Length: 263
Ligand SMILES: C[S@@+](CC[C@H](N)C(=O)[O-])C[C@H]1O[C@@H](n2cnc3c(N)ncnc32)[C@H](O)[C@@H]1O
Image 1 (cartoon, protein in one colour):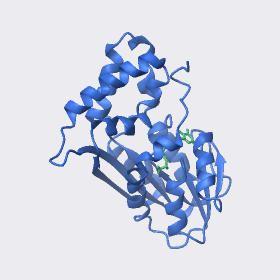
Image 2 (tube, rainbow, N blue to C red):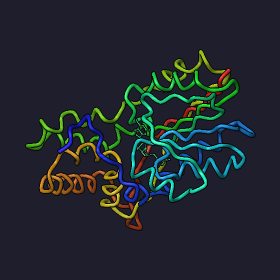
Image 3 (tube, rainbow, N blue to C red):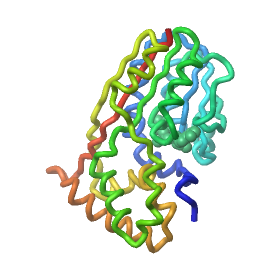
Image 4 (tube, rainbow, N blue to C red):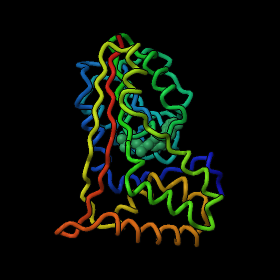
């Protein structure tokens, strides 16, 4: 069994089960990047290449490099976009060798330790007039997240799961990011969007969370415990997300967006 500090592997296939919904914030973020013709573009935490595809579509003349720490995600990204370049990197320490025009990241920095320090360092690594564009889920107070922590604390597994929540970084208030990036930025645009993803039913929310928030917890459980954990979670999710008239459930999902232009 892995320790909580050792991040469990990402599963590209499971992640892409809700690929359209997960890519939507990336689409909304790229739409706000105020660059006409960037030359060097990085997709930080490119995952299976879904966010990289958005960048390739918007900036067909740019050199685009996708970075990720997950071998499974990189394999899938290379398969999906053979023309793009993908490299293994840990964003906690990675810095561009050349001045980048766009550092883009959709749904990644909530997993990167000390992410605010990293964002400030990346901002400084941009070319003048370059752009740092970041989206992070700001959903730790949502029932789908709170219930994971509740169940982790209640079972016989509580001691073992005590550190699992540390894998996910707390997202600060918008002003903290504004104050962090403003000293380097000519223009800072910050906004929040709450998505309401219509999913088939309560088990669909569990499937969604299995690809992301549940990973650090399930990695510490054996097969029987995993089954028990998921059964308890599915029951409580059904109570917290009542069905709509057509039987679907709405997964409320707040996200924070930052677009900063280097002075
Ligand atoms: C939720 S996925 C986002 C994928 C894609 N950007 C998208 O728009 O859907 C998060 C990705 O961040 C990667 N990741 C997490 N921590 C990382 C780190 N420290 N360094 C590099 N990649 C990391 C994971 O491997 C995963 O592929």
